[in-house]
Length: 302
Image 1 (cartoon, rainbow, N blue to C red):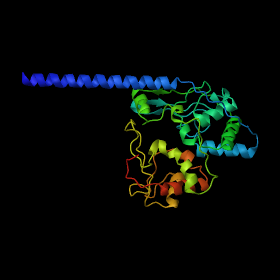
Image 2: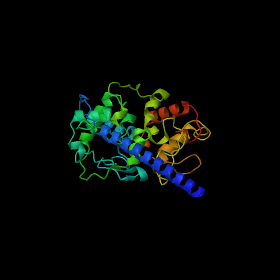
Image 3: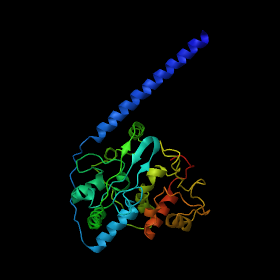
Image 4: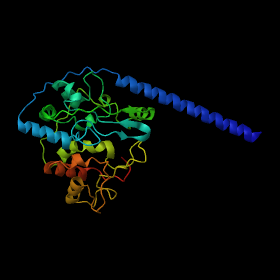
């Protein structure tokens, strides 16, 4: 009888805990949905679109290298939509077609600029999962260059792939562990301008925003919250023994350009090297100088 009472008590406790967890998940999921449904009152920036080949070339570089939009796991090398990435218990995501044959045709220049700077779609609601917080620092002239390049790129006729996030993904977003609801994370009333491009840690700090989504805010790597075991674990990018302490700039350059570590091992293709490999010499050196300047942290502290 005593054992039976204990088992009944344990079962009751488990049931209560499960119910509480379900209620918590439901509340967080509802808050996520309500936040995505919010319409932001942020005006469209004024954009001076250009047909100057130099401006378009700069826009192409920003899209392909600095912002990493033209990678296979983002909008695709032709901007006609990326491949569908399976995030296991978090859902699936496909970067949409942003060429003039897709969503690019639906947006005005000002709406594109607002999307890039604020993460707000043309209907005034937040974009999902697009890492605007990583590149909204781009100066006005670069935003205009991106718009100019997108208008000049060939149209691609391709349907958009699926985008679906689970309740777990919504909970992790509300707990600030995964950035899906983008506009909620942005202070739309402020903007920090970068310094002029130079091979300095100061400029590298802005470029390194592109690394934090996978390697964490502290850049020390570790498994991404909620990620399935099929996804690779991001490495430590700090000057710790677990990270880049023994690397030289030449090692770093080779890793970004060829996808090979100093020990000869290949970097997992999940890392968007098709974008990072296109960084120019100034950008690579700036990123390296910044990574060498951050506090050394053991692997896994993200």
